[in-house]
Length: 580
Image 1 (tube, one colour):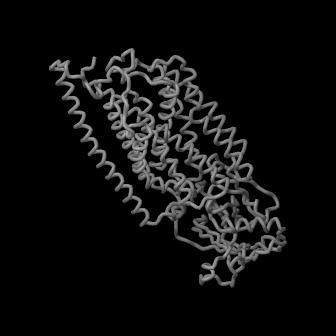
Image 2: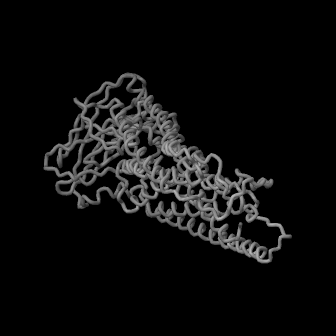
Image 3: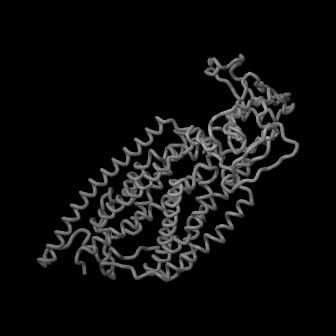
Protein backbone atom coordinates (compact mmCIF):
# COMPACT_ATOMS: atom_id res chain seq x y z
CA UNK A 1 0.00 0.00 0.00
CA UNK A 2 0.90 3.67 -0.18
CA UNK A 3 2.95 4.89 2.75
CA UNK A 4 4.17 8.35 3.65
CA UNK A 5 7.71 9.16 4.59
CA UNK A 6 8.84 10.99 7.71
CA UNK A 7 12.32 12.46 7.88
CA UNK A 8 14.27 15.26 9.53
CA UNK A 9 13.20 18.86 8.92
CA UNK A 10 15.08 20.54 6.06
CA UNK A 11 15.69 24.28 5.63
CA UNK A 12 16.83 25.78 2.33
CA UNK A 13 18.36 29.06 1.22
CA UNK A 14 17.35 30.72 -2.06
CA UNK A 15 19.16 29.01 -4.91
CA UNK A 16 20.06 25.85 -2.91
CA UNK A 17 19.98 22.62 -4.90
CA UNK A 18 16.88 20.56 -4.04
CA UNK A 19 17.53 16.95 -5.13
CA UNK A 20 14.72 14.95 -6.70
CA UNK A 21 14.99 11.31 -5.65
CA UNK A 22 13.91 8.62 -8.13
CA UNK A 23 12.55 5.52 -6.39
CA UNK A 24 10.62 2.95 -8.35
CA UNK A 25 8.16 2.16 -11.15
CA UNK A 26 5.53 -0.56 -11.46
CA UNK A 27 2.03 -1.52 -12.65
CA UNK A 28 -0.69 0.43 -10.81
CA UNK A 29 -2.80 -2.73 -10.32
CA UNK A 30 0.14 -4.69 -8.81
CA UNK A 31 1.44 -2.69 -5.82
CA UNK A 32 4.05 -5.32 -4.87
CA UNK A 33 5.47 -5.62 -8.39
CA UNK A 34 7.91 -2.71 -8.41
CA UNK A 35 11.15 -2.12 -10.29
CA UNK A 36 14.02 0.35 -10.05
CA UNK A 37 13.23 3.71 -11.63
CA UNK A 38 16.19 3.47 -13.99
CA UNK A 39 15.18 0.03 -15.22
CA UNK A 40 13.13 2.17 -17.60
CA UNK A 41 15.18 3.88 -20.37
CA UNK A 42 15.11 7.35 -18.78
CA UNK A 43 17.91 9.94 -18.74
CA UNK A 44 20.39 8.67 -16.18
CA UNK A 45 22.57 10.92 -14.02
CA UNK A 46 26.32 10.83 -14.75
CA UNK A 47 26.91 9.01 -11.47
CA UNK A 48 24.34 6.93 -9.60
CA UNK A 49 24.18 8.10 -5.98
CA UNK A 50 22.19 5.63 -3.91
CA UNK A 51 20.30 6.88 -0.88
CA UNK A 52 20.45 5.17 2.52
CA UNK A 53 17.38 3.13 3.46
CA UNK A 54 15.84 2.01 6.74
CA UNK A 55 14.80 -1.62 7.21
CA UNK A 56 11.12 -0.75 6.66
CA UNK A 57 11.89 1.10 3.42
CA UNK A 58 13.79 -1.88 2.00
CA UNK A 59 10.91 -4.18 3.00
CA UNK A 60 8.57 -1.76 1.15
CA UNK A 61 10.61 -2.18 -2.04
CA UNK A 62 12.30 1.25 -1.99
CA UNK A 63 15.54 1.63 -3.98
CA UNK A 64 16.15 5.39 -4.04
CA UNK A 65 18.78 7.18 -6.12
CA UNK A 66 19.36 10.88 -6.87
CA UNK A 67 17.81 11.63 -10.28
CA UNK A 68 19.17 13.73 -13.13
CA UNK A 69 16.65 16.55 -12.52
CA UNK A 70 18.31 19.81 -11.40
CA UNK A 71 16.05 22.00 -9.23
CA UNK A 72 17.01 25.12 -7.23
CA UNK A 73 15.01 26.42 -4.25
CA UNK A 74 12.49 29.14 -5.33
CA UNK A 75 13.91 29.23 -8.87
CA UNK A 76 11.32 28.71 -11.62
CA UNK A 77 12.35 26.75 -14.70
CA UNK A 78 10.11 27.46 -17.74
CA UNK A 79 11.65 24.62 -19.76
CA UNK A 80 14.83 22.59 -19.31
CA UNK A 81 16.16 19.73 -21.39
CA UNK A 82 17.17 16.66 -19.43
CA UNK A 83 18.66 14.81 -22.40
CA UNK A 84 18.02 13.58 -25.92
CA UNK A 85 17.73 9.84 -25.87
CA UNK A 86 17.53 7.52 -28.87
CA UNK A 87 15.29 4.67 -27.80
CA UNK A 88 16.22 1.27 -29.22
CA UNK A 89 13.54 -1.23 -30.24
CA UNK A 90 14.08 -2.95 -26.88
CA UNK A 91 13.55 0.37 -25.06
CA UNK A 92 10.34 1.01 -27.01
CA UNK A 93 9.13 -2.48 -26.08
CA UNK A 94 9.76 -1.65 -22.40
CA UNK A 95 7.67 1.49 -22.72
CA UNK A 96 4.94 -0.48 -24.55
CA UNK A 97 4.76 -2.88 -21.59
CA UNK A 98 4.72 0.08 -19.17
CA UNK A 99 1.87 1.78 -21.06
CA UNK A 100 -0.18 -1.44 -21.41
CA UNK A 101 0.15 -2.26 -17.69
CA UNK A 102 -0.37 1.36 -16.55
CA UNK A 103 3.04 1.81 -14.95
CA UNK A 104 3.41 4.64 -12.47
CA UNK A 105 6.61 6.24 -11.19
CA UNK A 106 7.44 7.44 -7.68
CA UNK A 107 9.67 10.44 -7.00
CA UNK A 108 10.65 12.19 -3.75
CA UNK A 109 11.50 15.78 -2.94
CA UNK A 110 12.42 16.64 0.64
CA UNK A 111 11.02 13.24 1.73
CA UNK A 112 7.63 14.01 0.13
CA UNK A 113 6.47 11.42 -2.41
CA UNK A 114 4.64 12.11 -5.65
CA UNK A 115 3.36 9.78 -8.32
CA UNK A 116 2.56 9.94 -12.02
CA UNK A 117 1.92 7.74 -15.02
CA UNK A 118 4.71 6.87 -17.47
CA UNK A 119 2.48 6.91 -20.53
CA UNK A 120 -0.98 6.57 -21.97
CA UNK A 121 -2.92 4.40 -24.42
CA UNK A 122 -6.18 6.27 -25.17
CA UNK A 123 -9.38 4.24 -25.54
CA UNK A 124 -12.57 5.20 -27.38
CA UNK A 125 -13.97 6.65 -24.12
CA UNK A 126 -10.85 8.76 -23.53
CA UNK A 127 -11.22 10.40 -26.95
CA UNK A 128 -14.48 12.04 -25.83
CA UNK A 129 -12.85 13.83 -22.90
CA UNK A 130 -12.50 17.61 -23.44
CA UNK A 131 -9.07 17.88 -21.77
CA UNK A 132 -7.40 15.98 -24.59
CA UNK A 133 -6.00 18.92 -26.55
CA UNK A 134 -4.28 16.77 -29.15
CA UNK A 135 -6.08 14.65 -31.66
CA UNK A 136 -5.26 11.03 -30.90
CA UNK A 137 -6.22 7.75 -32.44
CA UNK A 138 -7.37 4.68 -30.56
CA UNK A 139 -4.73 1.95 -30.40
CA UNK A 140 -1.86 4.43 -30.23
CA UNK A 141 0.70 4.33 -27.40
CA UNK A 142 2.23 7.46 -25.91
CA UNK A 143 4.83 8.30 -23.27
CA UNK A 144 5.11 11.58 -21.37
CA UNK A 145 8.68 12.88 -21.88
CA UNK A 146 7.86 16.25 -20.25
CA UNK A 147 7.10 16.53 -16.51
CA UNK A 148 6.03 19.75 -14.81
CA UNK A 149 6.91 20.08 -11.12
CA UNK A 150 4.80 22.39 -8.94
CA UNK A 151 6.44 23.07 -5.56
CA UNK A 152 4.79 24.97 -2.69
CA UNK A 153 6.99 26.52 -0.02
CA UNK A 154 6.53 28.40 3.27
CA UNK A 155 9.58 30.50 4.17
CA UNK A 156 12.61 28.27 3.82
CA UNK A 157 10.73 24.94 3.86
CA UNK A 158 9.04 22.82 1.22
CA UNK A 159 5.39 22.06 2.09
CA UNK A 160 3.96 20.30 -0.95
CA UNK A 161 4.84 19.23 -4.46
CA UNK A 162 3.51 17.23 -7.37
CA UNK A 163 4.61 16.04 -10.79
CA UNK A 164 2.24 16.55 -13.73
CA UNK A 165 2.66 14.77 -17.05
CA UNK A 166 2.06 17.14 -19.97
CA UNK A 167 -0.34 15.58 -22.48
CA UNK A 168 0.41 18.27 -25.09
CA UNK A 169 4.00 17.11 -25.42
CA UNK A 170 3.45 13.39 -25.34
CA UNK A 171 5.46 11.22 -27.72
CA UNK A 172 3.96 8.60 -30.03
CA UNK A 173 5.83 5.29 -29.59
CA UNK A 174 3.26 3.03 -31.29
CA UNK A 175 5.72 1.81 -33.94
CA UNK A 176 8.31 -0.69 -32.76
CA UNK A 177 11.29 1.16 -34.21
CA UNK A 178 14.19 3.27 -32.89
CA UNK A 179 12.80 6.62 -31.75
CA UNK A 180 14.45 9.90 -30.77
CA UNK A 181 12.95 11.39 -27.60
CA UNK A 182 13.73 14.71 -25.89
CA UNK A 183 13.14 14.37 -22.13
CA UNK A 184 12.31 17.78 -20.61
CA UNK A 185 10.97 19.27 -17.40
CA UNK A 186 9.74 22.56 -15.94
CA UNK A 187 9.47 23.84 -12.36
CA UNK A 188 7.06 26.34 -10.79
CA UNK A 189 7.50 27.56 -7.19
CA UNK A 190 4.42 28.86 -5.33
CA UNK A 191 4.20 30.36 -1.81
CA UNK A 192 1.71 28.84 0.67
CA UNK A 193 0.53 29.62 4.19
CA UNK A 194 0.29 25.94 5.16
CA UNK A 195 2.60 24.99 8.01
CA UNK A 196 5.36 22.36 7.89
CA UNK A 197 3.57 20.25 10.54
CA UNK A 198 0.53 19.73 8.29
CA UNK A 199 2.41 18.78 5.14
CA UNK A 200 1.79 15.04 5.59
CA UNK A 201 -1.98 15.47 6.08
CA UNK A 202 -2.86 15.25 2.41
CA UNK A 203 -1.18 11.83 2.18
CA UNK A 204 -2.99 10.55 5.28
CA UNK A 205 -6.42 11.97 4.47
CA UNK A 206 -6.44 12.30 0.71
CA UNK A 207 -7.52 8.76 0.04
CA UNK A 208 -10.49 8.69 2.38
CA UNK A 209 -13.37 11.09 1.78
CA UNK A 210 -15.47 12.21 4.78
CA UNK A 211 -18.52 10.31 3.45
CA UNK A 212 -16.47 7.10 3.22
CA UNK A 213 -15.12 7.72 6.71
CA UNK A 214 -18.66 8.02 8.13
CA UNK A 215 -19.83 4.89 6.29
CA UNK A 216 -16.81 3.03 7.63
CA UNK A 217 -17.58 3.99 11.23
CA UNK A 218 -21.30 3.28 10.85
CA UNK A 219 -20.64 -0.15 9.31
CA UNK A 220 -18.26 -1.20 12.10
CA UNK A 221 -20.62 0.12 14.82
CA UNK A 222 -23.47 -1.77 13.14
CA UNK A 223 -21.40 -4.97 13.19
CA UNK A 224 -20.40 -4.34 16.80
CA UNK A 225 -24.02 -3.86 17.96
CA UNK A 226 -25.21 -6.97 16.10
CA UNK A 227 -22.37 -9.05 17.55
CA UNK A 228 -23.03 -7.82 21.09
CA UNK A 229 -26.79 -8.54 20.80
CA UNK A 230 -26.12 -11.99 19.34
CA UNK A 231 -23.66 -12.82 22.13
CA UNK A 232 -26.04 -11.56 24.83
CA UNK A 233 -28.95 -13.66 23.50
CA UNK A 234 -26.80 -16.77 23.11
CA UNK A 235 -25.27 -16.21 26.56
CA UNK A 236 -28.74 -16.07 28.12
CA UNK A 237 -29.72 -19.32 26.36
CA UNK A 238 -26.47 -21.07 27.36
CA UNK A 239 -26.77 -19.86 30.97
CA UNK A 240 -30.34 -21.18 31.19
CA UNK A 241 -29.28 -24.54 29.75
CA UNK A 242 -26.35 -24.76 32.20
CA UNK A 243 -28.57 -23.75 35.11
CA UNK A 244 -31.01 -26.54 34.24
CA UNK A 245 -28.09 -28.98 33.99
CA UNK A 246 -26.72 -27.93 37.40
CA UNK A 247 -30.18 -28.18 38.98
CA UNK A 248 -30.76 -31.65 37.54
CA UNK A 249 -27.30 -32.96 38.58
CA UNK A 250 -27.58 -31.51 42.10
CA UNK A 251 -31.05 -33.02 42.59
CA UNK A 252 -29.79 -36.44 41.53
CA UNK A 253 -26.82 -36.15 43.93
CA UNK A 254 -28.98 -35.07 46.87
CA UNK A 255 -31.59 -37.77 46.36
CA UNK A 256 -28.86 -40.34 45.70
CA UNK A 257 -31.11 -41.74 43.04
CA UNK A 258 -28.78 -44.27 41.48
CA UNK A 259 -31.57 -45.80 39.47
CA UNK A 260 -31.51 -42.77 37.16
CA UNK A 261 -28.45 -42.98 34.94
CA UNK A 262 -26.39 -39.84 34.41
CA UNK A 263 -26.47 -38.29 30.95
CA UNK A 264 -24.85 -35.32 29.25
CA UNK A 265 -21.55 -33.70 30.09
CA UNK A 266 -21.43 -34.93 33.71
CA UNK A 267 -21.29 -38.51 32.50
CA UNK A 268 -17.84 -37.95 30.93
CA UNK A 269 -16.27 -36.27 34.00
CA UNK A 270 -13.72 -39.11 34.18
CA UNK A 271 -12.51 -38.43 30.63
CA UNK A 272 -12.87 -34.70 30.09
CA UNK A 273 -9.41 -33.92 31.48
CA UNK A 274 -7.71 -36.77 29.64
CA UNK A 275 -4.67 -35.14 28.03
CA UNK A 276 -4.68 -34.80 24.23
CA UNK A 277 -2.60 -36.80 21.78
CA UNK A 278 0.45 -35.14 20.14
CA UNK A 279 0.88 -32.91 23.18
CA UNK A 280 4.24 -31.59 21.93
CA UNK A 281 2.68 -30.13 18.77
CA UNK A 282 -0.42 -29.02 20.67
CA UNK A 283 1.52 -27.02 23.27
CA UNK A 284 3.91 -25.60 20.63
CA UNK A 285 0.82 -24.29 18.77
CA UNK A 286 -0.42 -22.71 22.01
CA UNK A 287 2.98 -21.08 22.56
CA UNK A 288 3.16 -19.70 19.01
CA UNK A 289 -0.45 -18.50 19.24
CA UNK A 290 0.22 -16.74 22.57
CA UNK A 291 3.29 -15.05 21.08
CA UNK A 292 1.35 -13.85 18.03
CA UNK A 293 -1.50 -12.64 20.26
CA UNK A 294 0.91 -10.52 22.34
CA UNK A 295 2.64 -9.22 19.22
CA UNK A 296 -0.62 -8.16 17.51
CA UNK A 297 -2.01 -6.63 20.72
CA UNK A 298 1.17 -4.59 21.28
CA UNK A 299 1.28 -3.51 17.63
CA UNK A 300 -2.34 -2.30 17.75
CA UNK A 301 -1.67 -0.38 20.96
CA UNK A 302 1.40 1.30 19.40
CA UNK A 303 -0.67 2.20 16.32
CA UNK A 304 -3.56 3.44 18.44
CA UNK A 305 -1.31 5.83 20.37
CA UNK A 306 0.51 6.91 17.17
CA UNK A 307 3.86 5.47 18.31
CA UNK A 308 3.83 3.48 15.06
CA UNK A 309 2.03 5.26 12.26
CA UNK A 310 1.84 5.39 8.50
CA UNK A 311 5.52 6.33 8.12
CA UNK A 312 7.17 4.40 5.33
CA UNK A 313 7.90 0.83 6.45
CA UNK A 314 7.18 1.58 10.14
CA UNK A 315 4.58 -1.19 10.53
CA UNK A 316 6.77 -3.85 8.85
CA UNK A 317 9.71 -2.90 11.07
CA UNK A 318 7.52 -2.93 14.20
CA UNK A 319 6.18 -6.41 13.34
CA UNK A 320 9.70 -7.86 12.98
CA UNK A 321 10.99 -6.39 16.25
CA UNK A 322 7.81 -7.13 18.25
CA UNK A 323 7.82 -10.74 17.05
CA UNK A 324 11.46 -11.08 18.15
CA UNK A 325 10.82 -9.48 21.56
CA UNK A 326 7.69 -11.53 22.35
CA UNK A 327 9.46 -14.86 21.67
CA UNK A 328 9.94 -15.46 25.40
CA UNK A 329 6.14 -15.56 25.88
CA UNK A 330 5.84 -18.30 23.24
CA UNK A 331 8.55 -20.41 24.86
CA UNK A 332 7.07 -19.90 28.35
CA UNK A 333 3.48 -20.88 27.42
CA UNK A 334 4.60 -23.87 25.35
CA UNK A 335 6.98 -25.35 27.98
CA UNK A 336 4.61 -24.64 30.89
CA UNK A 337 1.66 -26.50 29.37
CA UNK A 338 3.87 -29.24 27.93
CA UNK A 339 5.12 -30.04 31.44
CA UNK A 340 1.60 -29.79 32.89
CA UNK A 341 0.36 -32.30 30.32
CA UNK A 342 3.09 -34.74 31.35
CA UNK A 343 5.60 -34.07 28.58
CA UNK A 344 9.27 -34.81 29.29
CA UNK A 345 11.12 -33.84 26.10
CA UNK A 346 10.90 -30.09 26.78
CA UNK A 347 13.98 -29.19 24.68
CA UNK A 348 12.40 -30.37 21.43
CA UNK A 349 9.12 -28.79 22.49
CA UNK A 350 10.87 -25.40 22.81
CA UNK A 351 12.68 -25.85 19.46
CA UNK A 352 9.37 -26.78 17.79
CA UNK A 353 7.72 -23.68 19.26
CA UNK A 354 10.60 -21.52 17.95
CA UNK A 355 10.22 -22.96 14.43
CA UNK A 356 6.47 -23.48 14.12
CA UNK A 357 5.77 -20.10 12.50
CA UNK A 358 9.23 -18.88 11.33
CA UNK A 359 9.96 -22.24 9.62
CA UNK A 360 7.06 -22.24 7.12
CA UNK A 361 7.42 -18.46 6.76
CA UNK A 362 11.10 -18.82 5.83
CA UNK A 363 10.26 -21.48 3.22
CA UNK A 364 7.58 -19.21 1.72
CA UNK A 365 9.94 -16.22 1.80
CA UNK A 366 12.72 -18.12 -0.02
CA UNK A 367 10.27 -19.09 -2.78
CA UNK A 368 8.76 -15.60 -3.15
CA UNK A 369 12.12 -13.83 -2.95
CA UNK A 370 13.39 -16.14 -5.71
CA UNK A 371 10.36 -15.23 -7.87
CA UNK A 372 10.97 -11.50 -7.27
CA UNK A 373 14.70 -11.92 -7.95
CA UNK A 374 13.96 -13.75 -11.20
CA UNK A 375 11.76 -10.80 -12.31
CA UNK A 376 14.48 -8.35 -11.15
CA UNK A 377 11.93 -6.63 -8.92
CA UNK A 378 12.68 -4.41 -5.92
CA UNK A 379 10.33 -6.69 -3.96
CA UNK A 380 13.34 -9.05 -3.71
CA UNK A 381 15.23 -8.30 -0.50
CA UNK A 382 19.01 -7.72 -0.73
CA UNK A 383 21.30 -10.32 0.87
CA UNK A 384 22.37 -7.83 3.57
CA UNK A 385 18.78 -7.29 4.75
CA UNK A 386 18.11 -11.04 4.82
CA UNK A 387 21.24 -11.57 6.96
CA UNK A 388 20.13 -8.81 9.38
CA UNK A 389 16.70 -10.42 9.87
CA UNK A 390 18.26 -13.90 10.20
CA UNK A 391 20.77 -12.56 12.77
CA UNK A 392 17.86 -11.02 14.73
CA UNK A 393 16.21 -14.45 14.82
CA UNK A 394 19.39 -16.31 15.84
CA UNK A 395 20.58 -13.75 18.42
CA UNK A 396 17.26 -12.56 19.89
CA UNK A 397 14.19 -14.63 18.96
CA UNK A 398 15.59 -18.12 19.48
CA UNK A 399 17.46 -17.38 22.75
CA UNK A 400 14.36 -15.64 24.18
CA UNK A 401 12.23 -18.68 23.23
CA UNK A 402 14.68 -20.99 25.03
CA UNK A 403 14.80 -18.68 28.06
CA UNK A 404 10.99 -18.57 28.18
CA UNK A 405 10.90 -22.36 27.83
CA UNK A 406 13.25 -22.88 30.79
CA UNK A 407 11.24 -20.41 32.89
CA UNK A 408 7.93 -22.03 31.93
CA UNK A 409 9.18 -25.55 32.66
CA UNK A 410 10.58 -24.61 36.07
CA UNK A 411 7.55 -22.60 37.15
CA UNK A 412 4.85 -24.95 35.86
CA UNK A 413 2.50 -26.09 38.65
CA UNK A 414 0.62 -29.38 38.47
CA UNK A 415 -2.37 -29.33 36.10
CA UNK A 416 -5.55 -28.35 37.96
CA UNK A 417 -8.27 -30.84 37.09
CA UNK A 418 -11.48 -30.74 39.17
CA UNK A 419 -12.16 -34.40 38.30
CA UNK A 420 -10.06 -37.55 38.41
CA UNK A 421 -9.33 -39.12 35.04
CA UNK A 422 -10.30 -42.78 34.61
CA UNK A 423 -7.75 -45.28 33.34
CA UNK A 424 -9.90 -46.61 30.51
CA UNK A 425 -11.36 -43.98 28.11
CA UNK A 426 -15.10 -44.03 27.47
CA UNK A 427 -16.44 -45.03 24.10
CA UNK A 428 -17.62 -42.01 22.13
CA UNK A 429 -21.17 -42.31 20.76
CA UNK A 430 -21.98 -41.69 17.10
CA UNK A 431 -23.06 -38.14 16.32
CA UNK A 432 -25.22 -36.69 13.51
CA UNK A 433 -23.52 -34.98 10.52
CA UNK A 434 -24.00 -31.47 11.93
CA UNK A 435 -21.91 -32.42 14.99
CA UNK A 436 -18.89 -33.52 12.94
CA UNK A 437 -15.63 -31.57 13.18
CA UNK A 438 -15.74 -29.95 9.72
CA UNK A 439 -19.35 -28.78 10.13
CA UNK A 440 -18.60 -27.37 13.57
CA UNK A 441 -15.43 -25.70 12.27
CA UNK A 442 -17.46 -24.03 9.52
CA UNK A 443 -19.86 -22.61 12.11
CA UNK A 444 -17.00 -21.60 14.41
CA UNK A 445 -15.13 -19.75 11.66
CA UNK A 446 -18.09 -18.13 9.92
CA UNK A 447 -19.35 -16.04 12.85
CA UNK A 448 -16.03 -14.36 13.80
CA UNK A 449 -15.24 -13.82 10.11
CA UNK A 450 -18.60 -12.13 9.49
CA UNK A 451 -17.82 -9.76 12.40
CA UNK A 452 -14.60 -8.53 10.73
CA UNK A 453 -15.58 -8.95 7.06
CA UNK A 454 -16.14 -5.22 6.45
CA UNK A 455 -12.86 -4.21 8.11
CA UNK A 456 -10.99 -6.88 6.17
CA UNK A 457 -11.90 -5.15 2.90
CA UNK A 458 -10.31 -1.85 4.04
CA UNK A 459 -7.18 -3.62 5.31
CA UNK A 460 -6.74 -5.50 2.02
CA UNK A 461 -7.26 -2.27 0.04
CA UNK A 462 -4.45 -0.73 2.10
CA UNK A 463 -1.95 -3.61 2.03
CA UNK A 464 -2.66 -4.79 -1.54
CA UNK A 465 -3.74 -1.46 -3.02
CA UNK A 466 -3.04 2.25 -2.90
CA UNK A 467 -5.25 3.25 0.03
CA UNK A 468 -3.77 4.63 3.25
CA UNK A 469 -5.16 3.06 6.42
CA UNK A 470 -5.17 5.36 9.45
CA UNK A 471 -8.34 4.32 11.32
CA UNK A 472 -6.55 2.34 13.99
CA UNK A 473 -9.36 2.95 16.51
CA UNK A 474 -11.76 1.01 14.28
CA UNK A 475 -9.14 -1.69 13.76
CA UNK A 476 -8.67 -2.07 17.52
CA UNK A 477 -12.46 -2.34 18.00
CA UNK A 478 -12.65 -4.97 15.25
CA UNK A 479 -9.86 -6.99 16.91
CA UNK A 480 -11.64 -6.93 20.30
CA UNK A 481 -14.84 -8.00 18.54
CA UNK A 482 -13.02 -10.84 16.77
CA UNK A 483 -11.54 -12.15 20.05
CA UNK A 484 -14.90 -11.94 21.85
CA UNK A 485 -16.84 -13.79 19.13
CA UNK A 486 -14.11 -16.44 18.74
CA UNK A 487 -14.04 -17.02 22.49
CA UNK A 488 -17.81 -17.25 22.77
CA UNK A 489 -18.45 -19.52 19.80
CA UNK A 490 -15.67 -21.91 20.91
CA UNK A 491 -17.17 -22.14 24.41
CA UNK A 492 -20.66 -22.77 23.00
CA UNK A 493 -19.50 -25.49 20.59
CA UNK A 494 -17.36 -27.10 23.32
CA UNK A 495 -20.43 -27.27 25.56
CA UNK A 496 -22.54 -28.93 22.85
CA UNK A 497 -19.71 -31.40 22.19
CA UNK A 498 -19.44 -32.35 25.88
CA UNK A 499 -23.24 -32.57 26.14
CA UNK A 500 -23.17 -35.17 23.35
CA UNK A 501 -20.73 -37.17 25.54
CA UNK A 502 -17.65 -36.51 23.36
CA UNK A 503 -14.65 -35.71 25.60
CA UNK A 504 -12.12 -34.91 22.82
CA UNK A 505 -12.40 -31.14 23.23
CA UNK A 506 -8.72 -30.18 23.48
CA UNK A 507 -7.75 -30.22 19.81
CA UNK A 508 -11.31 -29.42 18.76
CA UNK A 509 -11.39 -26.14 20.70
CA UNK A 510 -8.12 -25.10 19.02
CA UNK A 511 -9.57 -25.95 15.59
CA UNK A 512 -12.84 -24.15 16.37
CA UNK A 513 -11.01 -20.95 17.26
CA UNK A 514 -8.50 -21.20 14.42
CA UNK A 515 -11.03 -21.94 11.67
CA UNK A 516 -11.48 -18.18 11.07
CA UNK A 517 -8.00 -18.29 9.50
CA UNK A 518 -9.40 -20.61 6.79
CA UNK A 519 -12.17 -18.10 6.06
CA UNK A 520 -9.62 -15.28 5.81
CA UNK A 521 -7.71 -17.28 3.19
CA UNK A 522 -10.92 -18.11 1.33
CA UNK A 523 -11.69 -14.36 1.28
CA UNK A 524 -8.33 -13.82 -0.47
CA UNK A 525 -9.68 -15.61 -3.57
CA UNK A 526 -12.85 -13.49 -3.52
CA UNK A 527 -10.80 -10.28 -3.16
CA UNK A 528 -8.30 -11.24 -5.87
CA UNK A 529 -10.92 -12.07 -8.52
CA UNK A 530 -13.69 -9.61 -7.61
CA UNK A 531 -12.18 -6.61 -5.81
CA UNK A 532 -8.73 -6.16 -7.36
CA UNK A 533 -7.09 -6.02 -10.76
CA UNK A 534 -3.94 -7.87 -9.71
CA UNK A 535 -2.34 -10.11 -12.32
CA UNK A 536 0.95 -11.75 -13.28
CA UNK A 537 3.13 -14.42 -11.67
CA UNK A 538 4.98 -12.06 -9.30
CA UNK A 539 1.98 -10.25 -7.78
CA UNK A 540 -0.20 -13.38 -7.64
CA UNK A 541 2.46 -15.48 -5.88
CA UNK A 542 3.18 -12.67 -3.40
CA UNK A 543 -0.51 -12.16 -2.65
CA UNK A 544 -1.48 -15.80 -2.13
CA UNK A 545 1.87 -16.76 -0.57
CA UNK A 546 2.01 -14.09 2.12
CA UNK A 547 -1.75 -14.25 2.77
CA UNK A 548 -1.33 -17.99 3.40
CA UNK A 549 1.19 -17.08 6.12
CA UNK A 550 -1.16 -14.42 7.55
CA UNK A 551 -4.03 -16.93 7.61
CA UNK A 552 -1.75 -19.49 9.31
CA UNK A 553 -0.90 -16.85 11.95
CA UNK A 554 -4.64 -16.13 12.37
CA UNK A 555 -5.24 -19.87 12.83
CA UNK A 556 -2.69 -20.16 15.64
CA UNK A 557 -3.63 -16.87 17.34
CA UNK A 558 -7.40 -17.45 17.37
CA UNK A 559 -6.97 -21.19 18.03
CA UNK A 560 -5.05 -20.31 21.20
CA UNK A 561 -7.78 -17.85 22.25
CA UNK A 562 -10.40 -20.53 21.58
CA UNK A 563 -8.57 -23.19 23.60
CA UNK A 564 -7.96 -21.02 26.67
CA UNK A 565 -11.59 -19.87 26.64
CA UNK A 566 -12.77 -23.48 26.47
CA UNK A 567 -10.31 -24.56 29.21
CA UNK A 568 -11.60 -21.83 31.53
CA UNK A 569 -15.23 -22.84 30.79
CA UNK A 570 -14.68 -26.60 31.19
CA UNK A 571 -12.84 -26.16 34.51
CA UNK A 572 -15.60 -23.88 35.75
CA UNK A 573 -18.53 -26.18 35.02
CA UNK A 574 -16.84 -29.31 36.41
CA UNK A 575 -15.82 -27.48 39.58
CA UNK A 576 -19.46 -26.55 40.10
CA UNK A 577 -20.68 -30.18 40.33
CA UNK A 578 -19.77 -32.94 42.74
CA UNK A 579 -17.91 -35.27 40.45
CA UNK A 580 -15.83 -37.86 42.19
